[in-house]
Amino acid sequence: MYAALIPNMDQEDLLEEDGTQVWIWQGGLFQDGSARTLHDQVRGPMFHANEMNIAGEADLAVKIRKAEYAPRLRDGLTEIEWADDSKVTQRVYRAIVGFLKEPVFRPFDARIDDYLSGRTDALTEQEKRGLDVFKNRGKCADCHFLHATLWPKALLSDFGYDNLGVPSRGEKDPGLGGHTHADGEMGQFRAPSLRNVALTAPYFHNGSMATLKEVMEFYNRRDKEPQRWGSTDYPATVNHTDLGDLGLTDQEVEDLVALMDAFTDRSLLRMRELGGRFPDAPAGTPDSWTMRAYFPDWNHASPPLPPHPPYRGHLLNPESIATSR
Image (tube, rainbow, N blue to C red; front, side):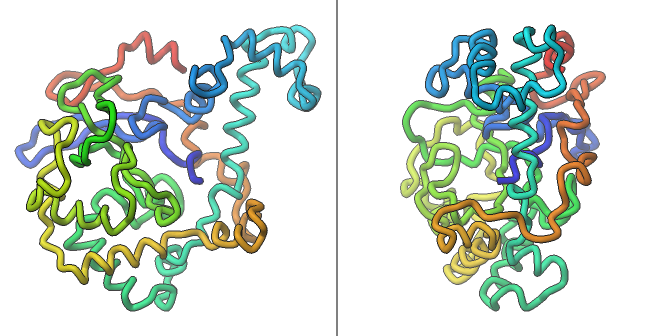
């Protein structure tokens, strides 16, 4: 859900309090940002050894030409183009990206949408208390924006990267730093959208938390009860400024957990009564063509290159940027 609205991986320049200019990564697909665009992301599973395990683009093109739907996919291509493996596979990727942009994957029909549109009765009293914590003492809205940014409605994320210090589980995952090779980015992962978060347990990049209450207690008490959570993979880059000792009461934690239900799309809740069938998009959801200017992959933007240090992170080689366009 909402994957097509995640921005391309990019760098944004910020000014620190001391006036220093720094560069931070935002966006990108997969939680570690290892796919720059949605186009890159849908391509990956085709050739991954643990997923579809196709030998390469030539093999994929052969399979596609034999598929039942090949005539529809070929529509508009000449004989020469249809014989070109790269043309066939690019059409495959674009078809999947186009599918993920369909209105059914972006209904924006959660109760939080009604509330942000002015319907104050859309939330319960407990959820309203949770929203107050979310915006203030809990600092949640600092990363999970409640206002429109890249889309006309709130995406509930700034799509930035951080190391939250979550408990170690299995093999160490370097996250963003695994492909930027920057020491300061080891263990960082992209902030997810909180849309439908109540339906997506377990939580964090390694599934180390089973419930939303555990997540809220972790944010609130991580630094006060380190023995409760255990070791983390990359302690040197853990964010100790924005979480870990929030000082929230048990009631405030409960209120935050209650608020998460307000982020669930009503259309998804209807799946049970529909016998598991994916629901249609709500009436009035704009089509992809109408919203084309808002989709990040229409822009084909490359990450900006800072003119000089200081900056955070690893700068992509300009040749690799040109090649990835």
